[in-house]
Length: 296
Image (tube, rainbow, N blue to C red; front, side, top):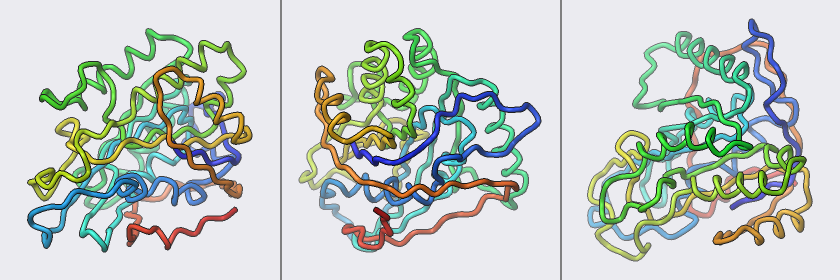
């Protein structure tokens, strides 16, 4: 898990039906971009050695955006394409699932996404990726199962390495202050939410030192199921609360083992009056991530 102690929103306010405008009252995607770069997830653990080292390999990751509201974060994730020059990897998000308790907000972002697709010339879904929207009330176990279990089923492959229980497959779970709002609820609601987050995260399916891990040049987890991976999923949490409180909260979650990193981010509120066509956000990176422009 990565914890970014900053400011954010809860996307559950009612949105006028006619409005497609994003609601980014706390901070925009650029302030979080360095935290969700695919390389920061994939290369958090060392990759395995690959037989054909001269071939470029492409990885498409999965993301779950909890409490999405009308944010444009999911759209920005799908447009984020990264070239890792050290290991000859091309990385991007190929599948993003947005969940929220406000159906009006979900309708807004769905309309906006279709609008942006129509504005984009020669949009290729294989390049940009796939987006889904799910109504989900984390206070209700039945709602969680109804929204997420079909997604887990699609992501989990039927192999000897697959998990016996439904879950896993998400490389990123992004939470922009949804946990903060749930902390105003009962303790069991918060525990249930964190358990679901932990359940959603990908678990490594082989040791990073195995030499025969990757045979193909392109692996897409969003379309063909749970890919073989040497990395685990990352929970990026943007919260008002101090890191000591978050540490204790996560430490008390039964059965969970977190590796926690903490960072303060500067607020960058963003009011968007127009909806532009989709554009690929190209990033050239290396394993050290020295190019990240973190603000503290």
